[in-house]
Image 1: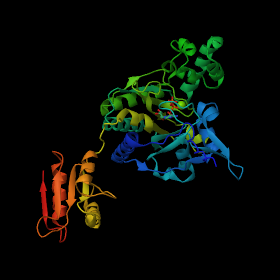
Image 2 (image 1 turned 120 degrees about the vertical axis):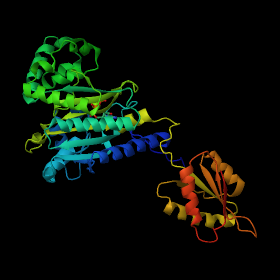
Image 3 (image 1 turned 135 degrees about the vertical axis):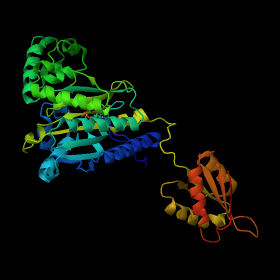
Image 4 (image 1 turned 60 degrees about the vertical axis):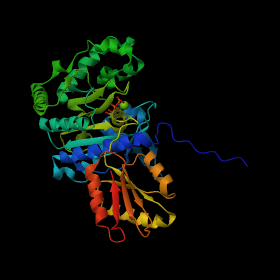
Length: 431
Ligand code: ATP
Ligand code: MG
């Protein structure tokens, strides 16, 4: 009989393992620490929503809605979509769950998103984002706090060098509309020379032409009308408050008047943190103000601002085989005789229940003595705790420190060992 074939993973999904998985976890842990520092409340959101949640929030003409969504009819015949982003679902929850009472509400989450894109390095069909939103705040200080938080996250990840904050304003609704009309006029004159995609975007979503990577479009982007000509004085004041707030907070930024964001819901502040260290997929974090979104979902006008960052792209910047994210020392427990295995396990569980994050305990399912100790050394543990058979003389526990450090953890371990009940009152050690 032929061996049954093993099914392959879905194109554009990832099985994350090893150093990449450690880098991924490090990004999420750092985000959790930073969002708590800024007092953003954690939320957990559904992975799917009714299709209209995204279609109405993002706009039918956006790439995400028109080409990238994983939508399907469920068994009840309802059209559902795997979330391609967090913001629309959080906005829906804000309206349906009565979160208005907490306004201004600061929330953060992370998890998988789904977009039908052409898979390549840094671009997947299931990818993961960190997400932070401030809902119900019209003040530019909310934009500033979010950007300061993003900036601090990159600094704490140690990747701020070489990542530049590109900042723009799209103005208020009126400014944006006037700019849009002028862009249509500008590009209509050269319509035939634009890429097919941009010809299609022309009436529906002309801002997106500014964002095009096609050289045929780029030729006409340079002298396209810029938003500054159309900004109302309120919009100008708002942007000035954001930039001066960033300066006060010590957040470096650069003005990029061609920066637009793909989604319809953006107003005022738009931003991206961009690096040239990841090739074409250089945007690691993007967001902006979305004052128009709640109304498109049938809610009352609600100012809001937020950002999302690609965890894989951040992990690629911090990662590398040789990066050690966690300096906590590891102690291996090594029995010197098969009869001592149970004792070794007992000590391991005692140490683990009192370790309190100060050290980690590594145990083995088989093997003992010298051979096992050699294995532990190859695995780069910090110290070995030998569990010896109590003979007429000699100690029961023997600790060997394999590395110069870590003094604190060693003394913690010593004091825990010192409090173990008999027969472990016989301790010795070196290093
Ligand atoms: P891009 O221009 O790269 O397609 P985007 O504007 O579609 O990005 P956003 O919707 O702003 O991206 O999502 C925020 C962040 O999520 C991006 O800056 C990126 O880091 C990450 N991201 C978006 N799409 C993907 C994907 N398909 N695979 C991996 N990461 C992604
Ligand atoms: Mg995209």
